[in-house]
Image (cartoon, rainbow, N blue to C red; front, side, top):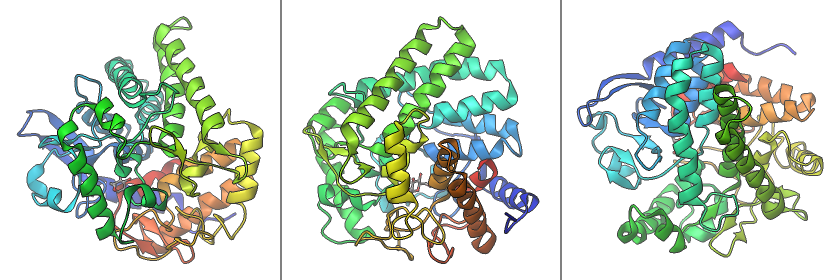
Length: 418
Ligand code: GLC
C-alpha cells in the first residue's frame, strides 16, 4: 500500500510542531526546571499528563534526549502521596484566564487535583529502551511505583482491581455520550457539559483532598474501561521494568504483575456484556453498566491476553462493520450507528464522533497484535491520510478527514510511532 505522505514529510511536520510547542524554563512557583511540549499553544498551553506521554513516544523518533526531559518534567509533578496531576500549570501567566473557561479541581493554583489515563509506565519504559539510560530508570522507578500504588489505594475502594474516575476529564474522553445520563446533561452542548461539571465540582468542594470520601459520595464514580485497560497494560510494563532493574525475584515485579492479572480478570468478568458484544464502564458504588458503546468499549484490545472470544466479537461486531466503527476515516470516537454520533465540528463538545490519532495509535497496534493486518494497515494509512489532507489537528471528520479542533496539535505526532 502506498502512503499518502512520506515518512520524511511526517517527520518534518512533527518536528516543527514538537519544537514550536516546546515550553522550557524555571517555574517561579516551585523553582523547578521544566521542558515539555504543550498540546497546543493557543488552546492548551500547559503540561497535560497523557498528552505528555504521547509527545515523549513521538520524540523518541526525533530527539530521545528531549523525550527524557518531557517525562522528567511530568514526573517532577509527583506529590508525596504518589499522585501525578492531569495538568501542571508551569507558566500560569501564559493564559491567566484558562481556569475561568475550563474546569479542573485544584489542590493548589499550579496543578489539577485530577488524574488522566495512566499511560506513563509504558512511555517511560519505551524511553528507557531507546536510550538505555540506567540513571533515568533509577530515577523513574520509585516515582512510578508510588504512582501505581496510589491509584490502587486511592481509587479502588471496593478492591475489585478496577480503579474509578471522579469526573469525565480524568478518562481523557471528556464529553463522551456514555456519561450524559450520570452527569444529568440538560443541554447537549459544550455549555451543557461545563454546567454539569461545575455541579460535580461544587458537590466535591467539602470533600477535597479525600479520594475515598469523594468516591463514597457517589457523585461521579466510574470504573472506566479505557482507563482500566491502560492501567492494566501499564502495570505489566511496570512489572517488566522492575524485573529488568531488580531481577526475576523482584517483589515489586510480582506485585504489579499480580495486580495486572486482577485488573484484566475484572475487566473480562465484570465489564463485558455478552449481548452487546462490548465492554461497558461501571457506574457508581452499585456498579451499574453504562450501556453506550464508544471507542472506550474497544480499548481492552490493547491487552495481549484478552480472551480470544472477546477479541473476535469486538472486531467482527463493532470494528469491521462500516455502519459502526469502520467509517471512511476510522475509528470514530462513537460508532456511526449511535443516534448521538456527531461527526462534524463539535464546538468543543468533543469525543462524540470524530476520529482521534491517539486512540487509532492504541487500536492499530492492538489489531496488528491480535492478527488483523487487514484492519491495522488501513488504519495506519487512513490516519496518515488525515494528516496529509488536513495537517496535525486535534481530531478529524470520520467521513472526510477534515481537520477539526486545535491546529498544530501535539499528540497527532504519535503517527511516527504507529
Ligand atoms: C481535551 C482531551 C484530553 C486532552 C486535553 C489536552 O481535554 O479530551 O484527553 O488531554 O484536551 O489535549
